[in-house]
Structures are given as structure tokens and as C-alpha cells.
Amino acid sequence: MNILNYAVLSLLRSWKKQIALIVIYALVVGFYASVVFFTSSLKTETSQTLQDLPPLWVQQLQGGRLVPMSVDLQDSISKIRGVKRVFPRYWGYFFDDATGAVLTVMGSDFPNEEIGFLDFNSNIKNEIGNNLKSKVKSIDKNIFQNGVLVGTGILETRQLQLGDFLSLNDANGKKVSYEIVGTFGAKSDLLTKDLIILPIKETQKIIGLKDSLCTDIAVEIYNPEEIENIGKKIDARFPSLRVVTLAQLSSTYQTLFSWRGGIFIYGSLLSVLAFLLLMWERASGLSSNEKKELGILKAIGWQINDVLFLKLTEGMILSVTATLVGIILAYIHVFVFNSPILKPFLVGWSVLYPAYDLQPFVSLGDILSIFSLSVVPYLAATLFPAWRGATTEAADAMR
Image (cartoon, rainbow, N blue to C red):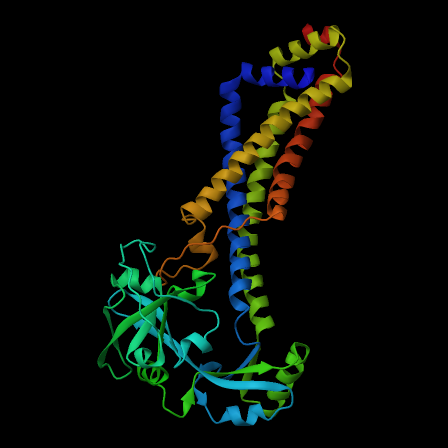
């Protein structure tokens, strides 16, 4: 405790220099921690939102591109042993001339039953930034046949509220309007922020699908262990179809976020190493006052291990303080201000997608990884200079 008290007093004697050091150190750690928090939150939200998707679906490819497929194919696929249920899906993209955003359009006649990842919420209060009034409407089949369900991002960009009419252009350029009968929330805005749900017939008009065509066909399996095998059977029976499994999609997203985050983590690690090299060079060249102080301490009976412990304690105080400040700054940057520096690079450069907020998620493993890559290298960088100062003779140090 005496050495700890002395270390604190020693740092306070040059508090201006130590504060400047902590600020620079915290900014470097904050950038690295921001990347860790952002990628970890994206991976977690993606895993949660993908859980409710079908375990397997098939798509029609032509020239390497996705094209509409015949609804009749579901009859042939349903006859494969192990298949529980087969149903067509109707979805596509819609360019909104009014806002310049690319929106996702999905068709469903029974959204409450068929779209499992949606959590309908018709009681929208002032949660989306534009003072929407609360309005309750029962989303049953009759109301939904003449209505539309939209994401909060569309309400924001179009400046609409429940009960207003949403105007869209169909595939022939004809303008059609639908009453907004509800909005919805989910575990993540990644799926629902730019989503429009219409009845199937209306969706076909908007994205230009004939009655006999669908976008793709979803397949549910009795035994989850047989997903890969059934996928191979479908692939062998229908060579023109592409089989996609939920595991493949999840792996793709995880790899994508890890790759993009790894680029920034690599760059931030170089910054940390450069900072540590600078600190080692500064510490290795002890000032005359620091040499005199070490000489006096040794002259009054301090041992080499006492001096080493003093310098390591000083380094621990500085590095832990800077790391904690950096973690707080990273949390504020990512989850309060929505990561304005990293988000365009880690998600994509498209400005058409409506903005969404990440849900705060910080794991113990993230915190430990940040500490291990900021505190441990700094202590290692101060160990050798501290040993040099501790082994210097007291008379030489004071002289």
C-alpha cells in the first residue's frame, strides 16, 4: 500500500503530462474498442434475427442472377422425404423516388402467422423521432387486404404516421396508395427498418410478378440434422435451382463482419503498437529528475524489486485508467451516437438504406480482449526501462 500511495503521488507531481498521456492512450484504445463493440453487436443481432428464418430455401438462377420461379415447384419439393412444409415467398426491392431509398417489399396474406420474426406493435408512441401519435388498429385479414405494414424507417423518411396513406408505383408505373394499418418492431432494426409488407396480390403488382411466379420457395424440415442432406437431394433433382441454408447465410454474415472488423482491428493494433513503442522510447530515456529519484530511493533502502513494482504500479494505473476511459468513449460512440465513424465502412457505403440503431451488447470476452491488448503490452513496454533504472547504482543515479 505504501508503494501504491507513492506511485499515485509520483504521478500527481506531473499530472498535466499524465493527463495528456491518458487522453492519447484512451483515444487509441477507444478506436479499437469501437470496432470490437460494433462487430460484436452486429454478429449478435444477426444471429438473433436469422433464427426465425426458414432453415432452407431454393432460388431460381439464370445467368448467375436470381429470377422469379414457378410456384408449382413446391409440389415436387414437398414430396421429398423429410420435408415438413413448403411455401412460396414473395419479396423484392423497391426504389422510393420520394426519399431516394431502396426499400424491401414482402408479400403475406397472414403476417401475424406467417412472418415469425415480426413483433407487431400498433401502439407507436414518440419512439421514432417524429412525434407519432398512438393509434390502435387490429391487424386482421380484412383490414390488411387494403392496408400496408411498414417499418419505422419508412415512417421517418416519409414523415407519415399510422392511418396515413403510403403511395407506391407498381411495376407498370401506376401509382397506388395503401393505408398504413400498423408498424412493427423486431429484435433488430436490421430486418424491419426499411420493410414494407403488403398482401401477396399487391406485392406481385409492385415488384412485377405473375400469379404463377414467386421470388423463392422456403422449405421446413422435420429433423434439423437432415437439412444438408435434403438440400443435396433438391440440388441433385433440380440442377437449375440454388439451395441456400440458414447455416450458410449465418456463416456468410459472420465472416463478412469479421473480415471488415478485422481490417480496422489490424489498423488499430498498429496504432497501439506504435504508441507503445513511443512510450518505451520515452521511458527508456529517464530524465535527470527520475534518475535522481530512483537513486534516492535505493539509497534509503529500496530494493530492485521495490523499484520494479513501483514502475509497474505506475504503468498499471495509467494503462487501466486509459483503457476504462477508452471503453466508455467507445460505448458512447457506438451505442449513443450510432458509430458515425465506423458504420459506413463496417456496414456498407450505401446511403439509401434508412438509418438504424444498434442494440447495446458488450460481452465479458470483449472487455477482456480489450484489456489484454492495451494493458498487458503497455506493462511489458515499461518493464525493461524500469529494470534499467532499478539496477543503476544509487551514487551514479544521484550524480
